[in-house]
Amino acid sequence: MLEIKVIVGDIAQIVADAIVVNIFEGVEQPGGATAAVDRALGGAISSLISRGEIKGKFGEVTIVHTFGKVPAERVAIAGLGKRQDFSVDKVRGVAGEFCRALRKLNCHKVATILHGAGIGGIEPEASAEAIAEGTLLGLYSFTKYKKPEYEDIAEMLIVVREKDKVPLLEQAVHKGEVMAEATNLARDMVNEPANYMTPSQMAETAKEIARKYNLECQVFDREDMEAMGMEALLGVAKGSNQPPKFITLSYKGDERSQKALGFLGKGITFDSGGISIKASEGMDEMKGDMAGAAAVMTALGAIAQLKPKINVTAIIPATENLPSGSALKPGDVLKAMNGKTIEVISTDAEGRLILADALSYAVKQGLSPLVDLATLTGACRVALGTLYSGLFGNDQDLVNKVLKAAERTGERMWQMPMPEEYKEQNKSEIANVKNTGNRYGGAITAALFLAEFVDNIPWVHLDIAGPALSNKESGYIVKGATGVGARTLVELALSEARSKEAT
Ligand code: BES
Ligand code: MN
Ligand code: ZN
Image 1 (cartoon, rainbow, N blue to C red):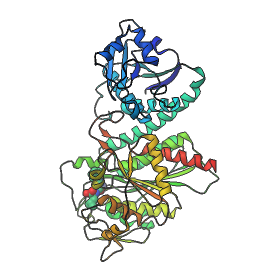
Image 2: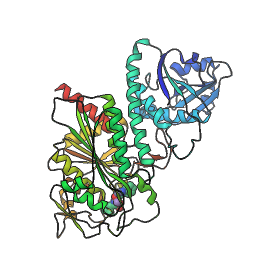
Image 3: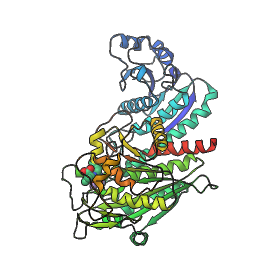
Image 4: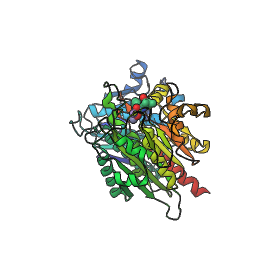
């Protein structure tokens, strides 16, 4: 496990495989720590800048050997991009990039300055947290079934000048580590193939998280779901030989309060489409249809470590969606836990079916506000691409809070409309609702469907179909699962606890 430490010293004097400094795009004369290292190297950095070999573009990492001019073997100059575009999220990205570049060179011990804390205008604590997050997220790889290509970096030193800042910076690093570890665990869960990450395995992972962080965990089986009237979830599960699981994880940070936030995650461990079967090309991607579930489960683990004074319950409906002789069929009618009847037009619109019961359950438990995460619609990915989650809500105050939490974590979200008129599309001739609309506005009609099951509880729905997986490596994102949503949920729980304290 990579160790991240905050130490007091002069970066130019650190003994390491590499020290990391930085430069903004377009800057000709480096300043601060970069200038000091440049001087020690006899002007090598400024010379490379004037020759145009170092441009300072975001993501650029230039590595020079020091040949004894400083104790460290190499100096990495990380490009921060344009100063006006700089942000805390850029620090995460820069850390991810320089860490991967140095790992390729077999560096085990790396020391870095606090990027952006000087002229970048970023708080030192925010920079330290972002470096910790970016380091751990950027170096992530899924190694269970194949040896990693490179050896791990073992030690990351964040070198600062003032001693009195160290305790706060250490706290910030700790928060960054917790956030990144939760995200990386979510990535592991999503990257796991569906033959391993079954609903039963999801329940086991939930129990492990509960044991490790002292959370309350409940796992309901098929009979329990039948007793609770979860016909929509059970309908989706009918085609699979894997038993469905309905999982809850509860964190109690405020024993005196009866209230609790509810986080819900779509846990389809494989989505073949069911009888409305998907095209075979790219179907393997559908092992990741439990990314929402992974994010809410791992967020609870992180919340339990950061201990905000608030109660949070996670709810995960988990099942496969497969075709078989016993599978749900188009035209079938199901009654959700809240009594509403649903005509199934497409068995491939299964996410909203299992969430119908999960939301009904959350309402019945009195959880409020509610936030659900789901890889719900291909339409959302078409609309917003792979960088943005679609955000829907029935309460602008909660919407703003989620957007603010997302702003802090760098997880990009875009609010989508929920016009009354489109509700028309979910009307059925024979039941209260049907589970698909027409070709247009598919992410919106899906959200309007979910809204049928939240009563008037403040609720936000995040359609993470776009950003749940990445097909390229960039900044702190690597190929495969991104773990999107986990960090924003943790940040939301922290900020909700802070605002309760204040009132
Ligand atoms: N899990 C899919 C959505 C999805 C698609 C997630 C691509 C990630 C990438 C969901 O269950 C689904 O199949 N949705 C259908 C809905 C349609 C039948 C109304 C879709 O998007 O095509
Ligand atoms: Mn589907
Ligand atoms: Zn699905």
